[in-house]
Image (tube, rainbow, N blue to C red; front, side, top):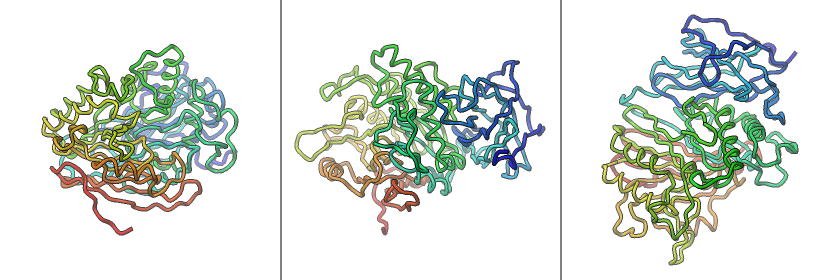
Length: 519
C-alpha cells in the first residue's frame, strides 16, 4: 500500500459542465483508451496552471510515478490513461464549476493540458486531477481581469535561469508564500547539461550517470524536466499561481539560433527540446511545437492596466557581430515578430506596456575604457533593430514602456534610449529591469568587479547586484514598482530573503528612480 492510499479518490461526474474525454492537447481521444491504474503515485511532478485569460486558464499535470526513468516515460510505459480534472470556487471543492476528462498518452509523456473556459474574470479558483484511483495536490489559480476592465493593482514576480545543479530553489519557497496574481518566467527553465562539478540532488546525494549527460534526445530532455520539476519548492510555486512563459536558450542548448542554416541533427535536437518543454509546462495547444518550429511569442492583456508582450529572441535570430549590428539584414526577432511588436504599440489600449524579454535590451559597455566593448548574446549586436523598436515606441506615444529581462544572472536597472551611440541626442523611452538568476551561478555577492566596471562604463545603468533571487512587481495606475528580492546563499537550505533595492517608474515619466529603503 502506497503512502498516498489515504488520499485516493476517483472523481465522479459533477454536472457542472460536460465532461469530454479528450487527449491532453484538447483533441478527441481514440477508442482504445483504458483506465490502467498505476502501481505508484503518478502525480510526483505536481500540478500547474498558466496563460490566464478573463474566462479561463490552461491546467497541467504529468503522470510520472518514476520521473527520472531513463527511457523518458516516467514509469508509465505505453498505456493511455484517462485523467479527470475539476475546477472549483473553493479549496474544499464544494462548488465545482468545471470538470472533464483528458487522455494522458505516451506521445506527450503522459502530460495533459486541459484548457478550461467559462470561468469568471479576475477570480481565484482551485483545481485538481485524478487518475488510476489517485488524486493530485490541489492547485490554486486566478483568471485575468475582463478586457479593458479598470484594475487598481496587479502583483507579479518575474524569474529566470534556474540551474538545478547551480543551487537550491529556496527562492521558490519564498515565492510560494507571496500574495501574487501571476508569475512570469523568462527562460532557462532547464539547462541542457550540468555546468558544475559533482552535481547533487537538492535533498542530497549524487545524480545518477544518466542525468549527467548532455540533453540531445527527447528521452534525455524529458528526464531533465523530471529532475527539475521534482523539487518541492518549484512545485509549490506552480501550485499557488498561474504562470506565463517564454524560453531562452538552455531549453535547447547554449546560445542557439533558429535563423541560421541548421543541419538535420540540430533541427532534431531543437524539436526534442521544444517537445519536452511543452510536455512539462502549462502551455496551450497553440504553443505546441511542430517539430523545430513553435509559436511562443504572444500578448496577454490584464484589463486596462497592462499588456504583457512575451518575445522569442531565438527562433528567428541570425548571426551577428560588432561590425554587423547596423546591417538591415541582421535580426534578433525576425521581420514578422518585429512588425507584430511595433504594431502592438499602436493597437494597445493598456496603460502599461510590459515586454518579457530574454537578453538585455539596453546597451552594456563592459568596462569604462573609451572603446565600447559590447556584450555578445544580447541586443547590443542587433542595434538597428533595437533602435527601430524603441524609436517606434516613442513615435507611437507609448508613455509607459517597461522591459523585464532574464539571462544575465544579475540584477540591473537601465534607461532605454532611442540611440545609444549618440546618448546626448537620444530620447529616453522607458525602463528595463534585468532580473537575476534563481539559482544559476550558485552563491552570489552584493557586487562584483564586473558590476563595478559596468556601472562606471554605462551612465544609463542605475543599479547592479549579483545575488540570486527574483523580482517582485507591484503595478498600479500610478506606478510600476520593482523590488529586487535576493538570497545571501543558495548552496545551503533555509536561506532568508531580503529586499535589496526598490525602483519605481512613475506613470507618464520614462525611466526608473530608486525608492530609498532601509536595509
